[in-house]
Length: 246
Ligand code: NAD
Image (cartoon, rainbow, N blue to C red; front, side, top):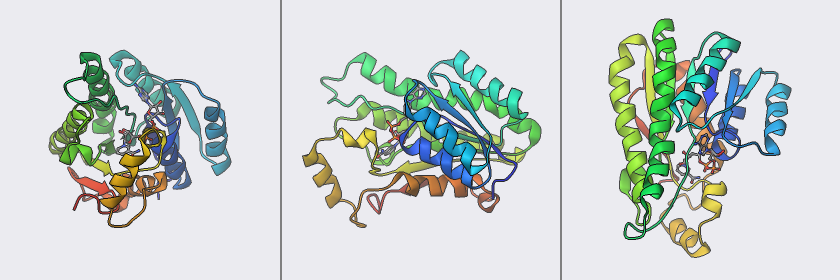
């Protein structure tokens, strides 16, 4: 389905990003894995992609840094000569009630979750425009749609990502580039692991499908949006949340 395609996935060292990289590789894409900090599982991920039979380039970069993201895209072009799919997945939380939220809590979350996506889009879009083809998929969150007490910074950044998605979708549609957002609900990763048990139980009450999401649930949708089958879908926000937000 994605044979011959080149994909960059940000924040792909673990969690949802890792499984997106594996899924896209299984569908035939060669992948650029962006990571911020080294961990033991990076080599394992690199080997997994190679075992699937795809090429892989590992690039360290902080997505919030404009210059580092420029180098990330340039390294992709240097190795593969193009970029077909950009998945803006890197994200962080710094939860606190607004009364206790610091300026750094707000800035860090905004810079990674929203400006990070802007940085990558800014550097990748000239190549996509030139080749008159591209897929941009931004990983937002249902929290960007409905808000959440204790996550004003995260909700604002994820809502901003939806605005960015819709605006860029309108700008580049004539160049055959689609831009969509995926809004996961509760997906089992390190990000949600750290939540108190009581909050987890409370969240389950709001999930009609009565299970927390798996990283594969998100990766499957990303692979579809990256494919030719999704050629007529742009500017959309698609929830992967077990019905949490209906
Ligand atoms: P995670 O913490 O397991 O993984 C996040 C990844 O992003 C990590 O590899 C981390 O190193 C990387 N990252 C963070 N800051 C970075 C930076 N500045 N530059 C480069 N990489 C950076 O979290 P996850 O649950 O896999 O989340 C992935 C995405 O999905 C995030 O955007 C998150 O907001 C979103 N999301 C997750 C859930 C969920 O329930 N897990 C729900 C909705 C949205």
